Length: 264
Ligand code: SIN
Ligand code: NI
Image 1 (tube, rainbow, N blue to C red):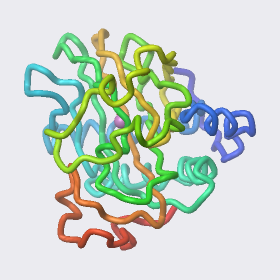
Image 2 (cartoon, rainbow, N blue to C red):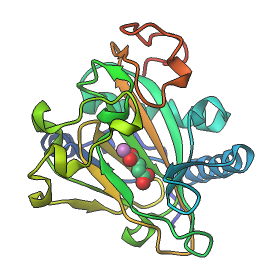
Image 3 (cartoon, rainbow, N blue to C red):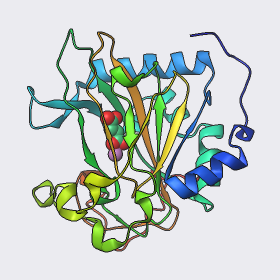
C-alpha cells in the first residue's frame, strides 16, 4: 500500500458519488483514511479482538461467517476516534441528508484460511436486525482496515434494493428465530444483479440499511479486518429486537438521544 498521509476532506464525496448512492443504495469512497490512521485503527481492532475474544456470526465455531466485537467504539479510544472521524461522519451525514447519531460499531474479521475456513456472509439487509424505529436514512459505513480484494471476502450489494417496497422486506425481527431467507421475502431476488465492491485499505463503502448485501469467504491467508459503523437517524427510537441488550432497559418508543449515541 502506498503511503498517503495528506488529510482528506468531505470533498472526496463528489456529486456523482452522491447520486450513485441515492440510486443504488451503496457507494465506495476511496482513500477516506490516511495510511497512518488506517494502521492505528487496524492495530486497535486487533488489540480489541485479542482482549475480548470474538463473538461469532454463524451457527458456531465451525460455521463462522464473521468474527466480531460489538460496541467496539465504547471499548477502545482509537475506535471511538474512528466512529466520530470527521470525514467519515460528514460523508455519512451528507449521504443521509439529515442529522445522524452513532448507533453501534463492530470489528468485522474474517480470519485467513490458514487459520479458519470462513463461510460467505449471509444475504441480508441491516434494517431487519436493528432494534429501532424511524430509520429511513440509517446507513452503515464499512471501513477497510486492510486491502479487501474479492478473494478476501469483500461485500456485494444488490443495486437499488433499498427502494423496494415494505412487502418485499423483513422490516424487523424480535429474535433470530424469525429470520426469513431473502428468497422468501423477495421472490425476485434471484434475478437481481449484484455488484461486488473490492476495497483498498483506507477506503470506506457506505450502504443504506435496506440495501441487500452479502460477502464472500476469505480465501486468502491474511485476515480480512474491517469495521462496520451504523449511523442512525437522529430521531430513531427503540423497538425491542435482536442484539439489543445494551438498550433493553429503555421503553419502546424512547429516543436514543443520550451520550452513548452522539450526534454526528
Ligand atoms: C461482513 O463484514 O462480512 C458483513 C458486514 C455487514 O453485513 O455489514
Ligand atoms: Ni449488514
